[in-house]
Length: 113
Image (cartoon, rainbow, N blue to C red; front, side, top):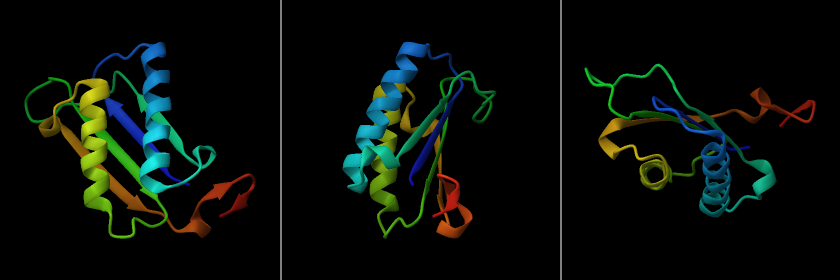
């Protein structure tokens, strides 16, 4: 159950949010070799986010997965490029947090995974 959340300190209109979400699902499905129906992507525009002393475009990317299987560096590169290309946030203005979830601590369809 991969979950990707992108917070960005800029407005993103509804149409662009939908497009980025759909592209994010496609990207993760390909990277993780998982069905699209098991992937959740969330974008939070207009976040109160400042990096350093600048309010230039910045993003906080949170990626949760049961097991990164030693591929975190690969996923960081892919998500960095994705956020830069789709939302215009330079790599040095992105922070990424990866979390491995315990399946028994995650629920879906009324049950723990």
